[in-house]
Image 1: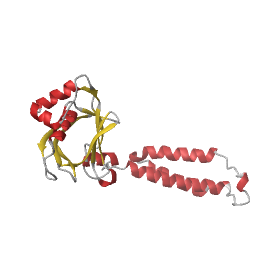
Image 2 (image 1 turned 180 degrees about the vertical axis):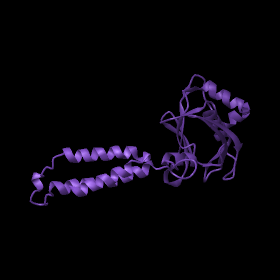
Image 3 (image 1 turned 60 degrees about the horizontal axis):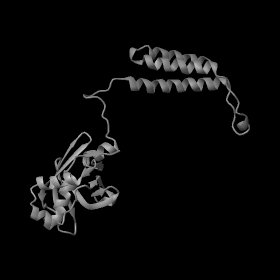
Image 4 (image 1 turned 60 degrees about the vertical axis):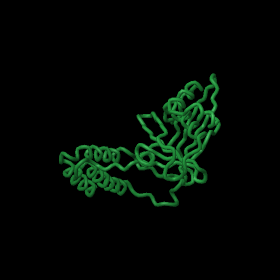
Length: 237
């Protein structure tokens, strides 16, 4: 068909430019397909839709090939600007940028000996520990995990001892090194420092009281120190 030959000649001439070698191969494959693919009549639709003759089909596919080649050619053209194409962040990347703590973190199994040593190293006296009511008998072990999540627009820090919830507070990111944990209606607020190194999270209480509430009671301070400072946490899938 003359129209088809003309379209093919024009497209091939355009494809002789170096930037469109790959697009040329696309056109060749499409035209080969036109030459070798028989036009079958769809038996179930014969009375519902008119069947085009072979030449019209060939011309239509050739025209489609021109459009396809143009699209491929555009994608091969060099882009202006410096630094390459802009890549939009994925939802998970955006969430991590807003809240690097988001997710579940688990500590290895720790013994009461380790937790008691952490409390003593934090500077609590024997009298303070006694008054706080903190008790972790030697010989016992615990496996803690902490989850930072945001249900219903409230950012929560949930601490689990195994499968049992040990505590749950709201929290607020202060900067890339600190966050606050607090009960909105109770006299509890702690300021934590955090360090994320790969998939490891290290926590430390650095302030007994912050902008959103009163200093926490002694029991909360001692317990949070024992649970969160004894061992680093590892990010979970």
